[in-house]
Image (tube, rainbow, N blue to C red; front, side):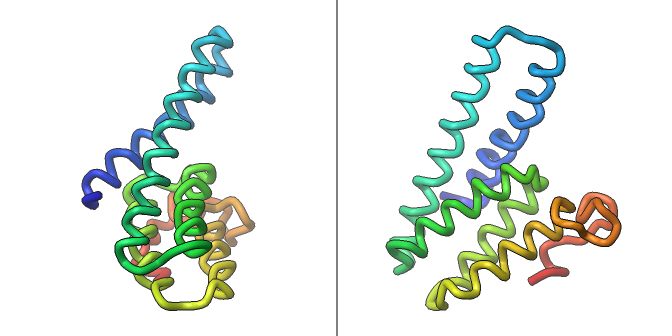
Length: 137
């Protein structure tokens, strides 16, 4: 999967988070909201599948590949900006290759902090300070 493919799929899945929230606020039908949730779930499954396939090709298998797939889902659930999510997944995949999973929690902590959802000092993370992936690699 190319970086562009990853970006497009990540952006679409992240955009659906907002669409679903808006649909719920505006009182859309449960059927339409369910359709949006299905589309988002399909996008996540596709991203997850590509992540595992790519990781296996790189020699990352088993729990490592599953964890990297879950990182992407985790990042989307936190509503991290799509381009940064795509870059972050690539960076973390490269860093985790050949490393122990005990480093995993550190990376998740960084992602939470930069998303502004885990008590970043200013409360907004990368969205208000402009911090990019290069600043937290």
